[in-house]
Image 1 (tube, rainbow, N blue to C red):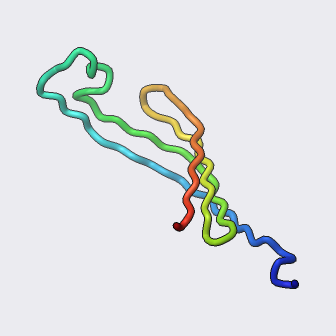
Image 2: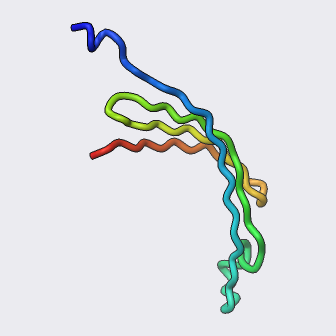
Length: 78
């Protein structure tokens, strides 16, 4: 069974940048931390493509509020 002797994996480096502006005309107190200002985030990641086009995505992102986080996503065709 030579077809199954190698499990194919490919790795891709990815980068992201998202931005937007939140406008709140109601000035709700619980939304004051993010409203009426420009927001952005950026980061780097690695995408691992495996069997049957399954994609495992590992990303580390930062935002302009001083926060940073690690994200893991799985996408598989169904």
